Each structure stands twice: as C-alpha cells, then as structure tokens.
Length: 69
Image 1: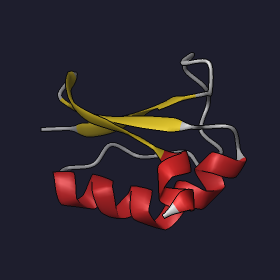
Image 2: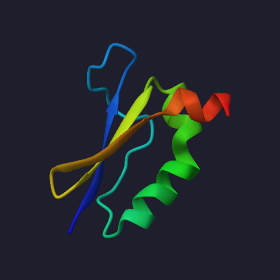
Image 3: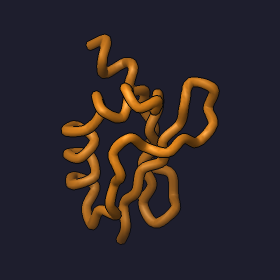
Image 4: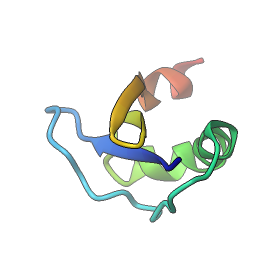
C-alpha cells in the first residue's frame, strides 16, 4: 500500500508542495509528516491537502484551519 498527499491552492488547483513528500507505507506515517510540515506547506502556497491510499481518496483537510486552531 502507498499513501500519498495531493496539494491544492486556494483556487482548488493542484500546486507543487514547498516540502517534497515521499510515498508513505502507513496512514500514520503520512499523517505524522503532515503534522510536521503543514506550516511550511501553507507558507509555500498549499491551502488544502488530500490523502490517498493507492489512488483512492481517503479525506481532505484545510491547512488554513490548522493555522487558525
């Protein structure tokens, strides 16, 4: 299984991440990476991230909401 992230700007278009992700072998590893890098990603232009497992969308979330929390 491969867990990957997609990054979107404020207009919903896909953007290149400010921090290059890897393919993760577990959901927990993917989520831990987002927890460590979300500020850099947000500053680099990503507003939303979506998690995929082998190409299937699992969930999406706003990085802006994390900043406001």
